Length: 211
Image (tube, rainbow, N blue to C red; front, top):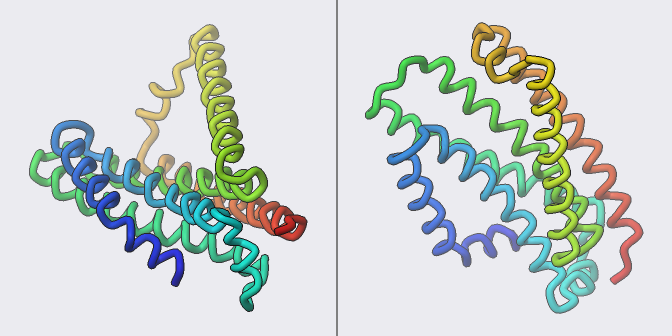
């Protein structure tokens, strides 16, 4: 209830994000709103943790009948609800513009939309433990460092593949819809495993914190 009321107080911020998503979808890529809204929605979970830590708020929060494990579970559930609802809203917006523009393959479009879901889950899995462990300021630095490291490794891997004459983008574009669907299903299953592992780590972090 607290986090949803907090989100209600940020309605102007979400309105700006929605307008930006609609504008970018109308002028650029049709799937932009799906990724953008999904990521922004899940990121609000981090803001709710920061608000809890502000002015020693956790000390008061845990004087209430709330367990630390329940607190962690709520943050993951809250993030999944926000990210999932924002993703669904992005799908609706993108579908409307895609119908207006006319796209060649709706199968490829919806597969691309589904591919964003496991990415949102992995994003939550990375952000929440770091935020709980390091707090607002250090948590942001740690998240940026991890994401930057992943991006750097991806760039290095891409360059290595190009050196050997391999182009994964070319391969993926020629995968049949069934194979792409299996790839997305595998990605979702792996993301769920990462999410469960992240949840266990977050519970251990919270169990050791002192307020």
